[in-house]
Amino acid sequence: MTFEYDSTGVEVRSPGSFDPLPENFYDLQITDHKEQLTRNGDQMVNATAEVVDSLEFNGRKLWHNVVFLPKDHKAAGIAIHFLKTIGEPWEGKFSVDPNHWIGKRFRGKVGIEQYTA
Image 1 (cartoon, rainbow, N blue to C red):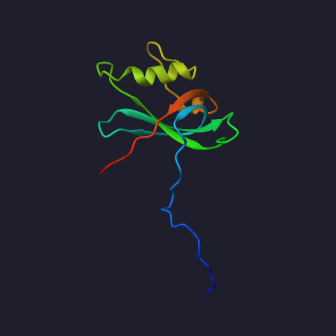
Image 2: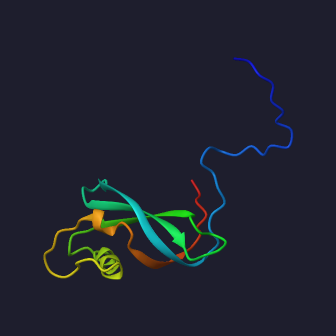
Image 3: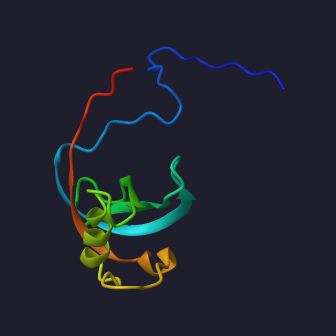
């Protein structure tokens, strides 16, 4: 099918491009997750969260990787802190079930870093 279209004044943007959230603290709710392994073979959960309780930014999405590192790694406590923050088991031995994360709320700080290749 052939049709006419006028693209005058349309801004060219890359697919999936968007303006980032301004740097600030936001109330967030986990809406989805994807389980995967890091390049080093560590368990990782990519949690999708949406901004809640913000008139201007409600529904805007962001992603947070939670990596479960070996106990001797200096950053191993980051995942434990996240679990504690969202009210999930975090002490001793426990099962991690990201399906239980859906609907959990937390407060997070959004920062912006310029990526340079």
